[in-house]
Length: 278
Length: 256
Image (spheres, each protein chain N blue to C red):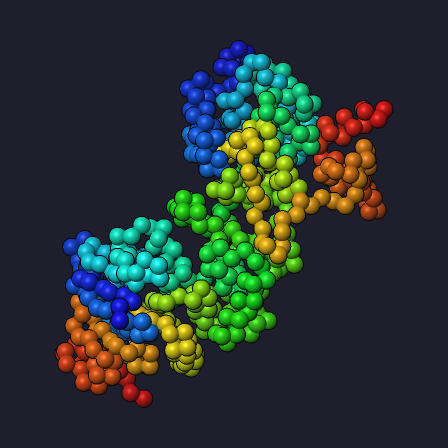
């Protein structure tokens, strides 16, 4: 089968219309999980089927796409999704954050500040922030509709009582526009403050069939206690490649003797900084 | 004095069968009402209708709220009813597992209602949890243990602490001593009686154990086949039962 056998960006136009409707509703009700008829995609669940569908519905032929996985442009997930859209949509791709118009991400927000002509698409494994506290979907929906969010703080209470501090380090719950409590997908809590941004943020969960969104410049508050305020934490090092002291770092084990190095998890950010010095 | 709870002609049917029907009574502040009857007599159905867990098919349950005065809880909006059940009401389940979060520590269990009504200060929540553990005679050192590590009696006491922490005015109890051995029962009853008297709580206790109501309840309702067959002061009903079924019930208690 040739690439031409596909409709633009793999999905048929009716499906994209359905997804766009869900996206518009999600933008109208920030943080609310909109159900949508998730399609079977040519990749396993858990590999970004939700994000891919949202990207497919968002892309236009003029777009320039960037795909990152844990901040990196060159890991399996990022490479294969980028290739997927190169083949099925024929859109231009890039690794430079500033040049991209649509960025699909797994578990990170790029370090470079995003602008209002960009769209950030998150891959979400479990969209329901209350899921591990309350297994019943009927009950969690009711809790959202009645804003009964005390349970979320029970989780944070448990963190402090067991570890002396809020130990939740990723997928840290946020309250969007003073209304819905939302799972920001498993981004490190270091990225939480960046969610008040100029770009549109869309979240797609394929297996769970939910889409939600944060419109530009929307208030996003990380939940906390008065005496244990939210802290955006990062490893206490500088990047061993570019020397950045303000970026989120990956710890890389170098050998069996305990050797390790810390490098920016955002490969484009690290690369750009090194280019500037050279 | 305005009754705290006015129950009028409550009826709940399961298809053609009667859950409970034609139940009316008043409960005054500080009063403890016992509901006794054999299994299937409709006492748990009645309690669930009163506590808002089941929607009755007919009748009114008028609760004297703090801010709005007497309001029919059957017709009030669901958010209001759920708010009441987190603040002014408490529900003690027969099985502590139904009323506790088993995967959350004892402190978290007690703190949940505080956090649900908006407390966001960890230190205060923890202090309240410690205070309540003490009041229900659980060692404060166990605050970070999960209820699954507790004995049955401790779980039941933890459930009571978790319910009373927001200072409710009305407590619904469904067989609070069921499944506990007699010495643990005695301590729990002692504790409950102390808490009810000290906090000036009103309570509705459903049980099939006449000893429990003898100790705790001021007044008594006897149910059979979904209807109230006899009601009155506890001692009066137990010492001088008028209805044939009550006489049977009283005489069925094993004497040691």
